[in-house]
Image 1 (cartoon, one colour):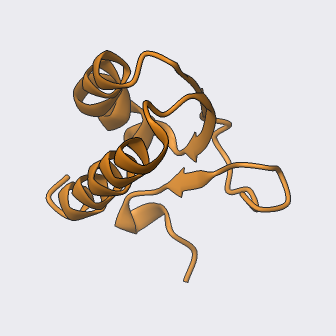
Image 2: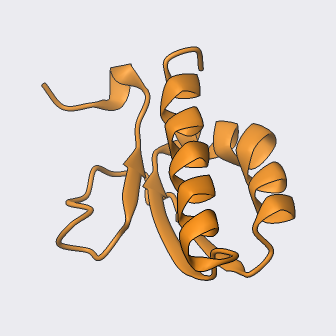
Length: 86
């Protein structure tokens, strides 16, 4: 969780910058996460994110397997260290 915090702060800053340049962010954001990553996102991140950016449609997918996020059309992938292939 501690390792995700800087990544999530970077995401917040990027979205803030985008918001300043283009107005309020809108559209869809597709994230693929493993089970533990999705649990953290749903508990700690998603509620706050959706409160801040209500015009963003969040598609959070947890398939229980490693996928190529680019090939499958995701904007981001969240994995905890133990779930990242070496």
